[in-house]
Image (cartoon, rainbow, N blue to C red; front, side, top):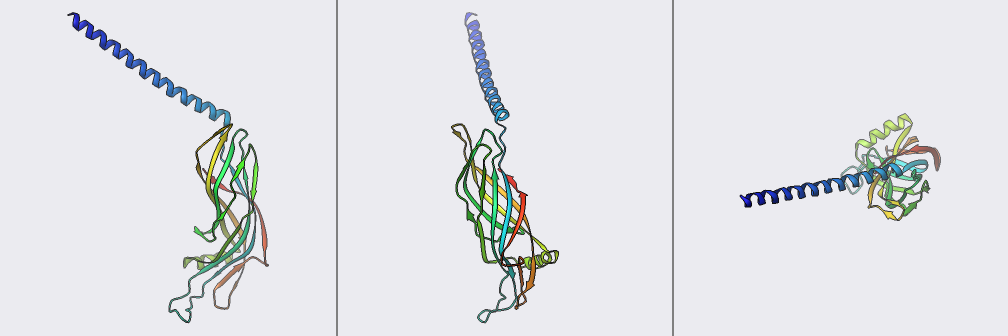
Length: 227
C-alpha cells in the first residue's frame, strides 16, 4: 500500500514537472513572437523602391532576311541589336533600416527574352531614406531571337512603340543598428515604352531604331520590386 502511494506521488511530481517545462517553452515562444512583432511595429520594414528615370536608345534593330549565306543552306536567324543607357534610381523608404545591395546585375528584356548582356552594378549601402542612382549601358549585338519575334516587332512597329523591360536581379541585406540580416534575393522589373521609327533594310529584314542617332526618353516609371 505504501509503495503504491509513493509511486502515485512520484507520477504526480513528474506530471507537474512536465507541465512546468511545457509552460516555460510556450511562454518563451510567445515572448519571441511578441519581440518580433514589436520590432516589426517599431521599424516597419519596407522593401526598396526603384524608378526608371530615363533611357537613351542608340540602336534597336531586328533583322531577318530568311535568305541563305553562300556557304550555308539554312536561312540566317533573326538577330536583334540593342544599345541603350538606362538611369535607375533606388530609394530606401525606411527611416530606421539600412540596405546593402550586392551582386546586382541589370539587363534588357523583350517579350520575355533577354536581349542584352547583364551589366554589373557596384555594391552599394543605402542609409536611412537614402537615394542611389545608377546609369548602366546595356549592349546586345546580333542576339539570336525566336522566329515569332519578327512578326511581333512588326506589330509593335505599326503601333509606333515597343515595350522593353529593364530588369535588375541581385541580393540585399537589411541593417538595423549593428545587426545585419542574411541575404535576400531581389527582383526588379521596369517597363519602358519606346517610340519607334521603322524601315526595311535592303535584304528585306526589319530595322527598328529611334528617330536619330540617339534618342533619350524620360519615364519616371515605377518598377515592380520583389524581395
